[in-house]
Length: 367
Image 1: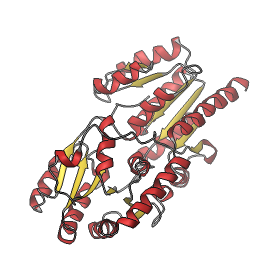
Image 2 (image 1 turned 90 degrees about the horizontal axis):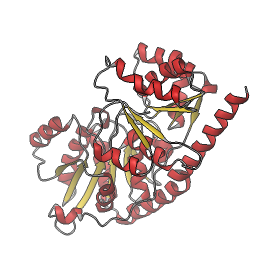
Image 3 (image 1 turned 120 degrees about the vertical axis):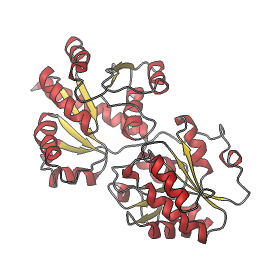
């Protein structure tokens, strides 16, 4: 169960898990509670996943939960696996009502900032009801235990993963943008949300433009921050340096990543970002903020460089250092590719999840 589908983050994670679960052992149903683009739903249905869309448009649409409640009762669903805080809260209430044998709550980006209601709901409703709470990093697990007071026995770290890097070739990014030979590309793939601190990246781009000849900063994604970013780019006179590319189909992201010299993530907070894993899978060095689970993913000076969040100067300095050193970039990119293959493979993660589902159900049915 997920709030809505999107081409990145927890949303793409949930849909890909549904696709890859073994159809010989699992009947796969993905419940999407809010309206989602048809182009993201159709591939799931072609893969044999049954998609249930509730069409919620506000918190007050309580009546729209009825089809899911009826389905869970009628088909005696064994495992309800929800993703992200909002869906976890609703799923916890529904799991109690319907008495689903196994309820798995999945926290993808821990961002607790002191809200008493969230702390109460995470501890007293979600974690109390859940058979297990999964986190995407050890840091998130520790924070849920230490800050929110969740029972340590209930919280488990499940390493995320990405699929093998898709071969590029569908779009020729540099040619499309009309870039001269020798142009150095810095880029990020993310939703344009405040969490991603893209204003910091834009300000860093101003510093890079003064220090690195022929640099371009590309931002792939869409979201509510677009207008503010456009205004900042215009204010700083960066119209020829920073390019907002909008959203691309997920199968074309590999072409974007392949064109980059350095991948960047400037976020204020993160869980274990799939975007960084995608960069590593493509053999690209990463400059990222040292937040959430990123330090567990990117070894500073090994697979890339980690910087303090909120600092355009630190971000620009780290990116500039890699742009000036092609050999170091190549070595970090290859080290990152190897780490991703070894520790963050998507199929291996799904196999672990399948075994966990079966073990949890066996424990419930034998008790």
